[in-house]
Length: 321
Ligand code: DGY
Image (tube, protein in one colour):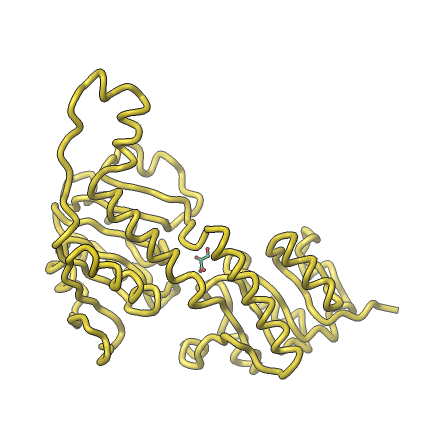
């Protein structure tokens, strides 16, 4: 006889989340099994809900292994690793964790802008390694306040980044799939034109096939030798080879990157590029926001079990994209 479960967990979301989920439902912790869902047989038959994360994803073969699946509750705002087409084909709902991380991701975009422009990471090393004493004055850097900020993707995170620009007396324009009539910022229909106008270009759009290498060599050239590129979205949106070549040749002034095409990246990629400020994909990684993201996954599971609806489903147009 096979055990009967309500929820299959293909990713652990931390001890606290895992315990709370298991206290309420009969959970199959498939993430403990190195062979994944393939290791299970009849136990998967009646499972209605799956819990995952954007890092672990949810693939066609996972959908195939779960014949009774009705909902996937994922941790993270991104859905580039979740096979939405496979979900839509079977009418399976998918939830993510929007809103709760907007402020932290926007804060990190600003930290990277400031760090790339004012060289705070380099300055930190300069003091700690005794270079200040040995070499004297630190080189002058780039002003941030009163400059022009271009944003690629004016979703909730892009808007949170734009709002913060008011405190820096910056003009803001944006480029996205379509103009947002209510937004108090200028719309540029061409990304190259936005880059040419901008001192700072911040990438805040979704990842996935539709946005792959949107920031390509012409966009990078348009941003120019004084321009700074910031990416807190997905490494796939930027043609990293083109960005690195432009940074090395001086065609691009600097960059602040939380996300890269290959994560973790080999250190050699950015060796010697002091005009680049890097972080290891941590936009949402604060205690407060990570707790809120886990809570929202749990709320989605609870709501689905109660009413058959998800609280924060991926929008229908994204499911079909
Ligand atoms: C997200 O929420 O998509 C983040 O990138 C997760 O790290």
